[in-house]
Length: 327
Length: 273
Image (cartoon, rainbow over all chains, first blue to last red; front, side, top):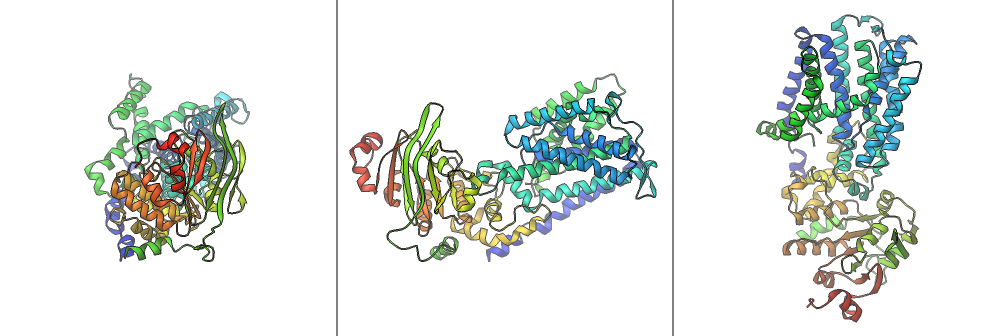
């Protein structure tokens, strides 16, 4: 008797409202390039994927990395180099970026998960800075100049990515695939263990979980997906520079995630959109961008700590969405 | 009805029937010459301990006597400075804590250890996932965990939390959190349970519930518990070890120990009985 009530718990009803919202969002993204500047939208999508990949680690495993720029910018360099110098097709070039970021994630993660809290964060920062220095010195990155003029090429050999709309829909497709992977990881048996580690690490150990392995796996997955975003960005903007491996980039992704809502699946998308929009529109005004984003960040932390989407979930409307911040 | 539920939840393990019920039960967990230094301070010194199958063993002592440190050493959350620990005839002195848990030694914590932002059902399921081999699959949907529901609900019902199964653990009262923790621990079907102050901060009714659970569980498992409530200890425990300043003062059944003059002075003082 009880089993029946458990298995038929909340499933069927709540899906409708949530899936409706997701569908509206996807339709919005499909229509968006006809109303907004596609390059700007593609930038938002790249950063959104970056922030969501970062959130997989911060929001669902409880590890704060301050070195994600290494994966983002690193993948951009690898992809740019593979496409421009080796002449690889675009999709393979992006895979090279992902692979590079995965290896970097394995190395940095291996050291970072050995410690907790601030120490772990500092290790990620230190190693990412070392990588940034390597990028400054190495010859293939062309130092201060970066890799310029990366060809967008043809997707699958026949879809011309120099057409803005083709490029946009390619980016959107990669973005949606990335989001699906993140969603799947979070809502899987593995994701459940990650959440338990986030909630209470000693308890997870006492239940027999070798926590370090789960943390490393999450770290590497996050790095790989960050690499996907980074590689994509290199193709969109046709260059890879030191900006993307700098520690400011690591800070920016923390900001995006916090603004949108830690531990919510879609929060970082909104955070990334907000930050990118601010940068875009303030770039031409006389207001200094960093001051404005700094103020917004402080207001966010002081007034709505859960972030935009986090607050929405906590509100009465969000309660109707039922399934809390994806816990 | 409750009795049969308890049977289903606790008696369902694969413990060897031949060993249980015997009078001279075997030693499942033992420590020899356990010592732990923190800098110059010796927190635990020369502790010998034998925990028997199907017995409840209490570890008591004044605050700061080193009870929790002993727990941390036995479960390998702390590495002993010297001494050896044996679990089910295997030396675990150098084994890591997760491995020790997988071998069948599971602990609870002094401060209630639940996963606060997971539901009651998920709390128990997380424990069931590992023996159910459903912990690394990042490609499977959440629904794949539903096959653990039946067992999870058995455990949840056995501790009387069924009405709250879809609530977050954070919303439970303190006593019910502890009960949930016990259900989670039992989900692993451990051979040896280490309970760190399972009754601390509980109301009367909850103490009774937990006492009953512990008694039930101890029928075919070994239990070592730290407890301050001496009434509970007198009631529940087959053996008592008194710890003082990191060393064992005395050990034996409750009557013997409670009449020991040194124990009265060191610990029980005047207020008991």
